[in-house]
Length: 115
Image 1 (cartoon, rainbow, N blue to C red):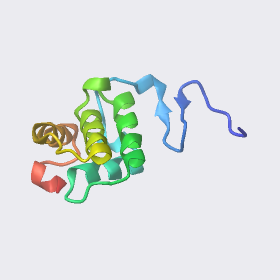
Image 2 (cartoon, rainbow, N blue to C red):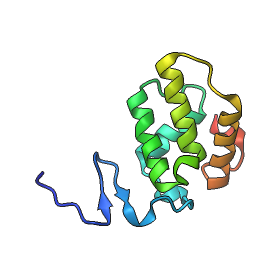
Image 3 (tube, one colour):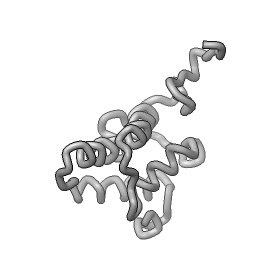
Image 4 (cartoon, rainbow, N blue to C red):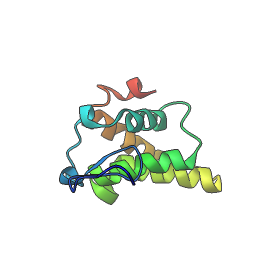
């Protein structure tokens, strides 16, 4: 590795992980990396991503920077990955919680704006 990583900012890909802000539960939409925002919005949209690796990248970010395993964006990303992997219906209630969470976090003012 030719690049040094500080103790505060570690990554395993080009999406940084800010150790000081892990599992704070407080997500500022302006601090969400563009790629994660795009994937997250895609998960709420009419044509969600179909590559489970891409979805898991977003899941990891939300797990680390949101509410950990109880973060609705993390839970929905895992649920969508499960749906992709075994082709079973996804949990509609979990999707609704995810969309409501995105409104709460500030990704949109209303749920219909996410689609």
